[in-house]
Image (cartoon, rainbow, N blue to C red; front, side, top):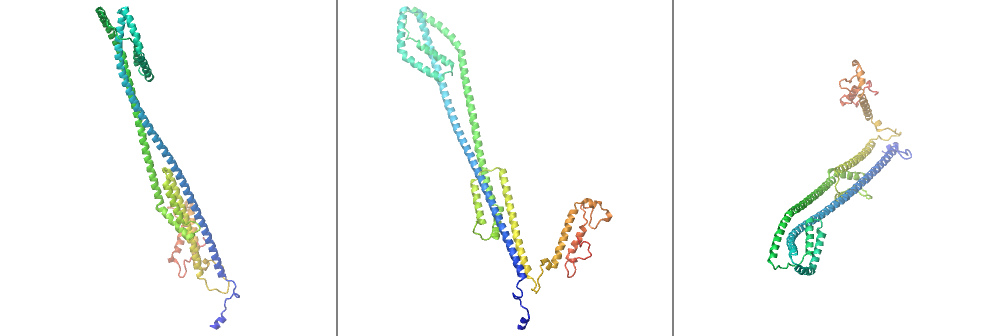
Length: 491
């Protein structure tokens, strides 16, 4: 053993100061490390950008939701104010109508009683006036002189009563002027009669005077009957006026009832509208709940958590994905508390935008995951390639690719490239139908078909090449070896 060791040359730093294998391994390791770290930095930057975009979208949605909630609150407050004002106005109108109706009934009743009383008094006064006129005509002068003294005394004693009647007449004219001309005329006549009235009649002492008085009274009664017949027409006109007043009052009462009915219907419609708005708000809240707890959202959450753990790992400087989703849940909870009613078009537009954003993030996450897997495969391939290096020799190794070290893989790659070129040429020639149509039937190459409509000359070549790819056609000890005499070798 000592002799062999002495004969066998040993590798020292003086003999071989530089190792190409170690240099290549170190170069690959540094290159992979730089590539992987740069990829991780890009991926982290994309995740942060996606987080910023998500937060911005959520803030924008939250602000729009708050604005819509404020507008809905203002609208509902205005509606409630309008409803309350309408209710107050309705109550006021109803109270005023009832009060006016009661006052009108009372005034009509008083007017009727006043008319009856006035007619009675006027009849008695007219009788007294007729007696007075008769006495002035038939009485002697001494009696008239005595009676004139009694009249002056009567006026002096009845002056306060006449003043009170004048005040009452002024009040009547101030409140009831223009409503009934006939009543005003009767009242004025009554006031004139009261002012010109005298004391009680002085009894007669002779029978002839009494008989003459009776005859004149009969005559006056006949004149009174004629006068009463003349008053029938004004009385009928007064009754017609009263009936017209009653009809006008009934029409006004009907108009008020219709107005009240319309206001009640409007109030009912507003109540139903408020109920519909509340149902829409409930549906929107339910929709937000479904969107927050839907399988797609949970899937995106799990995907982001796994991506964060696989790429970023443990990182305490910034918030994790889970904390970010907790903040998103809190924001959605705030939105559910503050959100109002949206239109169907707005809800559909936001749903489409959110789905597009989620799909874009999912695609980016899948691409990042595929890149990570690709990097891992590259690292594993580089390690597996270093495991079967031959024993180091004294000469320097040539820079060869892994395909040069494995001829079978090189031939397989060349064959795949040829198949790809044939497929591309086939797809290009399939669109040129005029070429196949101008060829003669007797000179058609193998694989050309006129029945399919998309003829190709190289279809037969591709079939032949696919046949050589079959493992049953390969030679013993060699993998997929082509004969050198094939005409498609130089494709």
